Length: 417
Image (cartoon, rainbow, N blue to C red):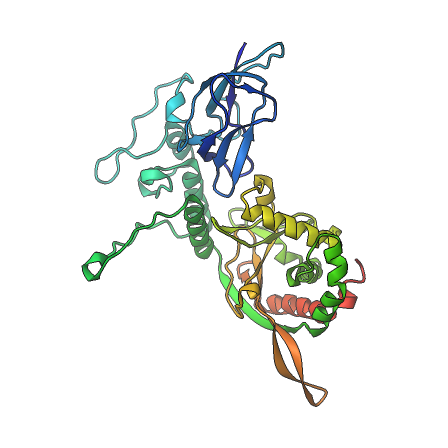
């Protein structure tokens, strides 16, 4: 029998993706868990595996298509094993998904309203399900800036408008009109990649929604570097690299356990601080496609060697587009290290909905006075940005000093593993 394979749930906050390539052709035989579509989401490039086995009878999408979760991808004629196709009518999911234009087969119980006009009289570019969600949430679509192609408004845009309203956030504004730069010379336009568009959107939202404060400090990491050099060969023999970031993760965990408000999120609508009793640290990774933040789960339960292996693995897969969506979610605190690029001090932006981020700068030898004598010491600059709505400056200072103390006393910090 023929079974329709639809785009499954890709993870929290991911409602659609762009088809990069179709990995099968009509007439091909597919197995369960075989990749059939290569999809670019807001954060990663992933292969979507088939949940059915059989012969592909029809392909319903092509490269370049934008496909929401629940969209029909391929039809498969199964053999002996039969799997029921998903119903064409709307499924009972928590929130309605945006419907693709090419598969509008679901019967509507009532006729949908015509698109509301924009200020210039044109219809608002939004799917019926998006307009329905906006009506349910009381959102005026004429006041929502669409993030999709041609300004198309998605359900995420509607939800973001609700969050802005609840938190007193700044509503998206129309782009500022630019002058004609070609009047003064030759120019070249380069379209933003999908990942860069998402980075721009997320950074703008984070800057608008978070009351940013950045504090700076410096740690004497001379003894830490000596420890790293002593254990470098042993770690490399296990296939890992003992980097300063790995050791910094351990120091940060000691501070997060002492000051739990840094391992939290703010629910402004409910006036609650959500304290998280798990420690998943996001690591900012520079890739050809843009900044990605893969997450190392349960950092507090892992020793130095385990962290070194996992950091190397997850960073490499982020750079080669082999990272899974679940590995980009669930972070509680983020670490970014620009020291490897020679940067000293900088001001990192909080990775909302987290409430704090630690920036590591390049360690340099400096003349330092110790017990009345001047001697060279290796000094690492640190930058802590946090949400002032949740964290006071004094707590920020104490949190930073806890990290500095841990970095300056590595043997004590690592005694527990």
